[in-house]
Image (cartoon, rainbow, N blue to C red; front, top):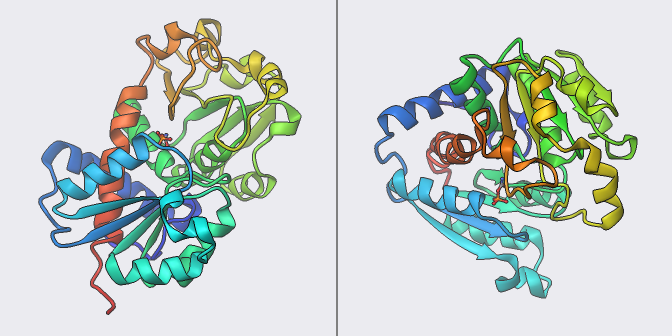
Length: 303
Ligand code: CP
């Protein structure tokens, strides 16, 4: 499918139609395969932070589409010795058809995209995780049959995954209820923008956010850019457990982008229980990124 945007830096780069179209294409690819539309194409991947799912699913996805992926830890590139993001982008653009980057600062992926002559995909920054949101909504559509008119509850840190989920919900037409400490609310600009099309509610009461929800989602309480014992103690009451799930809709699903710490942000009986969709969610990273790569890395070459 065609996307108006050249890059995917946030979910808000997509229109509601494109967002739904990518999810539909991902479901079709999962059922029927996709052929080899990226034969001869290369994806360059840069990782400043660790990754299991993002790295493996992008690499497997490129291979399955007939292409190839190069994975670069920032520590093993000249970025670690001070080469600029812009010069790195210009260089990788000469070897590849698309760049995926997992960086700390969101501003850095914006600079990478500005200097690149090939599409750039945000594989997670401190502010956003758009690829995760695509997989989350594919999972929601598979499990619940729709992506709109739902109540989605987020319990815990209003972090990068939460911000992207809110942006996705706005495109899909579902409401989001976030339960978190006041100091950990999601980005105010993201909430303001999403509130133009759906309801986005903030509360400090996890049971209130989850009440009647069709989707209950959370993330690790110890993120890659935000650690600390005091955070953990303030987030402890936002754990998703059987009591929280009992207050949600009877058909509710549980989502977690992983990695998870059982007993901290989620109890083992929930993440390993019948309402958990986390393994489909992890698998769907592969299918949604293949749809995204087909759309972005499969474009006619400019050079
Ligand atoms: N959810 C996610 O991005 O997983 P990784 O950090 O393992 O890539």
